[in-house]
Image 1 (cartoon, rainbow over the protein chains, first blue to last red):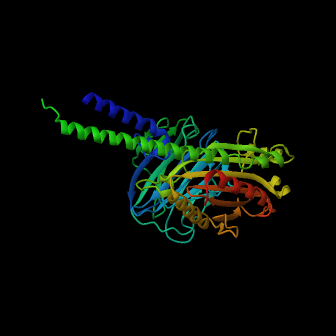
Image 2: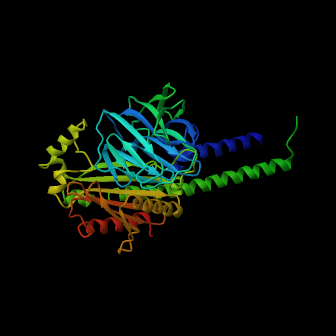
Image 3: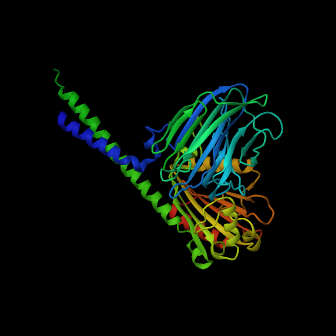
Length: 226
Length: 242
């Protein structure tokens, strides 16, 4: 009888396993460093009450590809502990108000990534030194995303304190390149409410295979993979 | 060493068989939904084939969407439309005049000035003289997103509406009752050199059809009405009623 039960259990498990691809991406939750919905390379730093901006120097992609995936992006974030998020960076592929681009466009998201705006017409220069910044503080036009020479203004967005410093590279599909494929290096800073900039003091990293993140120091790292 | 009593064996067997039966039922249910979803997606990926054949459009995007947009942030549960998402497909059509027409050289010059590689297709969204010289339809993107339930559909529409309102696009219910949401705006400054965009969101019980039309300043609901009628009709046939 025990042998029969074991066989039955094995059959059940085998069927459950065979179901996984048909169910949803939720089946891939195990091993994902961030969530089960997209692929990420993440660098998370500290938080403080006087954080008003997070930014990074990088180089825009010299080549990029989203051949069978929906998008690839890199972005910095600031967020509080009450559900307020400002994400700013650049992407290629599927967007929101821009259904599709094969160029590189700046974008921002608010509200847990759900309110997305793509900077239509603001094509980034490829293979160029690039500043990406998410900034939020009181006053008119003080919530913005700055990417290369482009500014996007979401309007007034009230974010509480403390505020976290965070970075994320993201793809929708493992056929999409991350960080230009061969690798993209970031050097990250945060801005205090006295308008002084400071390099990040540390970062905790993770990446979903086949993508990778390699630390280069307390404020810098390289991401890539495809 | 303990021996299992006959009663325990019967109970365990019953539970195991019950689990097996439940798993098989779930498998069958999922298979049906998966097949229906696949049929919906594959059929609607061909929604606009007439555009390509009749009006000189070429496919520039034809991709599955295994996940849905950006929609998650550190430490937060994703919104319902992310968790409820099953699969999707986007098909994009680009006017042949953008690929082979007299303004292609200018499009490539812009791409070169940005150090972009020059490929078979021009940089999209289109901008510059190609938009100025062609006031009608230039790009069409047909996206179908399948959700596990109506919850995902409602969450998607709510999020989409909020995002576009935040972006200063015009969001309104359409006079056409088949269209749940109609969005209009400009892909950049409204200066005649950047495309206008018209987006329709059409729903069925658990799927959303998004029709995004891009073109010059003459783009209007009237111009795209034939394509919209065809798309909505086929979407209804393949993906179920509203």
